[in-house]
Length: 195
Image (cartoon, rainbow, N blue to C red; front, side, top):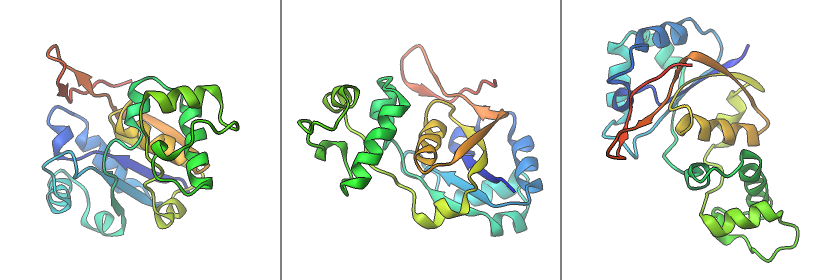
């Protein structure tokens, strides 16, 4: 059975998202592994607050007890993602960093002749950091997995790239994916649009 991976369905991002009930129904009905990625770092949500919110919004207690909750942090790949650097270049850098036991792309020798020109350009443009996922989490995720949450081109995409690096293939559940939006003042808003 496919694992259900849930990204950032939590209070800080859900105030304008009308699909919480449908998401909780999907989570409750899923019989396989459930991984709940959350973000404490960038929000005022604690894990305990998030758990209470999930229960208040319809998650079954037995489902919460059997799910794996993982604080994913924020922004390990976002520098390059936000610059539009191709996912393949990001994955190439992750492989390089893993092979050479590096945490930051800052530690990559740009003069290394084995690097692609695209990766060298990316290294000059910004910084990414290596995989945040622990082996115990990766092992719980099936090769093909279901992915819900958001934001589509932000945290959800970051998790998707890390899992693709690990050889996992996402099946997006489009009606349960939200997209962040930038307001006219260029500050972050979390309005939700469905695909």
